[in-house]
Length: 244
Figure 1 (cartoon, helix red, strand yellow):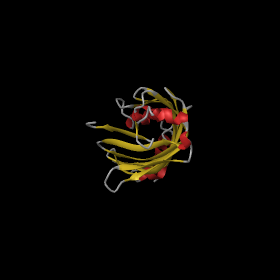
Figure 2 (tube, helix red, strand yellow):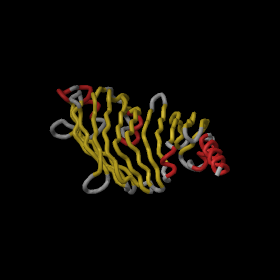
Figure 3 (tube, helix red, strand yellow):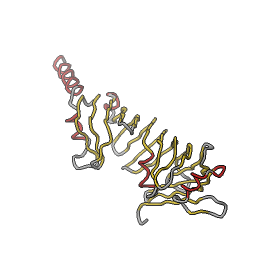
Figure 4 (cartoon, rainbow, N blue to C red):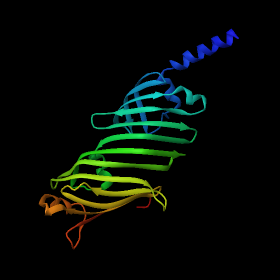
C-alpha cells in the first residue's frame, strides 16, 4: 500500500514538472505548418517565445492545462497568443478527433485580409476585433461556428486615401450548409450591406458599397474596389477556393 502511494506521488511530481519542450514533441508535428521555438515551462503552464506559421513569425504563446480532464481522456485549458499587432485568447478542449474553442477573442490588423479581398491598388487600415462564441472541429473539419467581427478605424491608403468608419460582420451556420453571415456599417462615411459564405470548397462574398452623403474621398476609393452601378453604388464580389 505504501509502495503504491509512493509511486503515485512520484508519478504526479514527474508529470507536473514534465518539460513543455519535450511534451510538445508529441503534440506538434516536426514537419507541420506550425513551429514553436524557445519553449519553456511545464506541460501544465508553459510558453513559446516564438510561434511560426509557414515560416512567418506570429508572436509569443502562453498556455495552461487543467489536470482533471486529462484523467477522462481530454485536454482542456486556455492559451494566449501575443504580438505587437496580433493577439488571440481562447478556452479550448480536445478529445480524440474533436477540438472545440470557446470565448475566443482576437485582434489583428486589417492588412491581414488584403490577400483574400484582392485589392492590389489599396492597403487596408484599422484593426479587426473578432469574437467567437463557439468553434468546433471534427477531423479538422468545422462543424460549428458562431461569432462576430468589428473592423474599427476602417479605411484605405494607396491609390486613394479614405476613411470608412466601422464595419460589422456576424457569422454562423447556414441552413443550406457551410458558414456565413452579413456585413453592415455603423453609420460612418461608407454605407455597407452584404453577405458572405464559406464551405469546404471555397468562399464567396458580395457587398453593395456607397459613399454616405456623397463623400468624395470614399467615392474615389470605391472605384478601385468594385463595379460602379447606375445608382452610384459599387458592387464588390470576391471568391476563392477549389476550382476558382
